[in-house]
Image 1 (tube, helix red, strand yellow):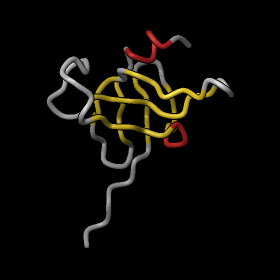
Image 2: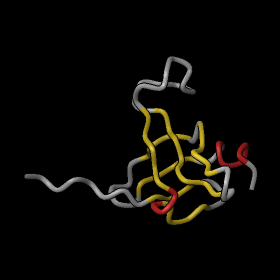
Image 3: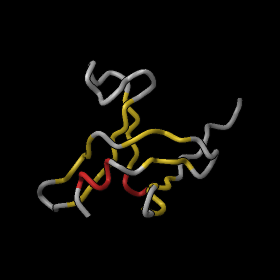
Image 4: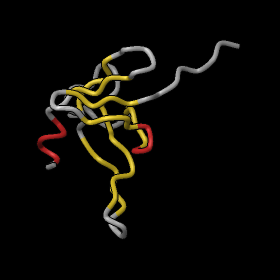
Length: 81
């Protein structure tokens, strides 16, 4: 699968059903040729044009399934204190 195909898929957290957005970048280990994390712009940032201050970084180990239209990830919500 190519990066341009990944960018077209919506990322959804299976723990709460929230749509997190679309992938704008990948963190890649160039020595091993592995994807380390998906990077999604945070709230209020479109296409990451206005800086990289608030990003959602999803470690590759939290990717559950890559489907035809969406990418399912498992990001547990913090427990209330």
